[in-house]
Image (cartoon, rainbow, N blue to C red):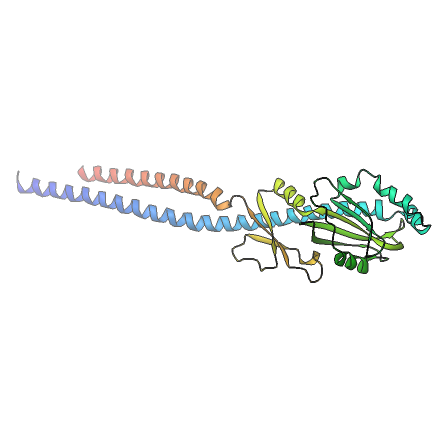
Length: 284
């Protein structure tokens, strides 16, 4: 082999090694760039989508509460604003007044606890829904608060209170005429189990919900809704904490990785094709 041919073969081998090295460097840089883009794009996209998702969940929870409170409000007009019954009590015909509520089959289907108190020491009537457990009504300290704040006063007040080993959405109102004007001393209490509300919300949205008692919301909590405005004075702080069953990051990242992988394969193929053309041009 003459010197010129030997030198030429060496140069070809060097160029081939350079092309291989360039290809490896390009592949490595492409991999790093893809992973970096995946993190940046993924995090920004997931963060934006999660913010929208939190608003959607929070709105859904609030709407569920509002719908339940509307049911309470409608029943106030049906049961608490009933002058004919309160006239019976005025006339000392309590037994007849009692029967109007005791024989009504719809009360314990719409509420888990229903009570009328003509004073703050003793109930006039109590109704429970099926499956209400031990059936322990609110203690008389709670009833006394309800009585003081609502007896012979127009309107109603909504609460979340704990009794019978559960939390209940509770509405308290006076005993009034058709226009909501109080007629006699006393209060009416409507309560609906809080866990039923949670069940209805989780049936609509893919989230997990729990009540946090008397503590600050953990920093790692996904999101929360304060219930403090619905608690009794002096009661524990209540917060509704919720999180999705599956995070958007888990759902979205596989698609982002797949897209970047496809783009990487296309880029790598174009680069390999260009190197191939350059090599053949050098040989020519």
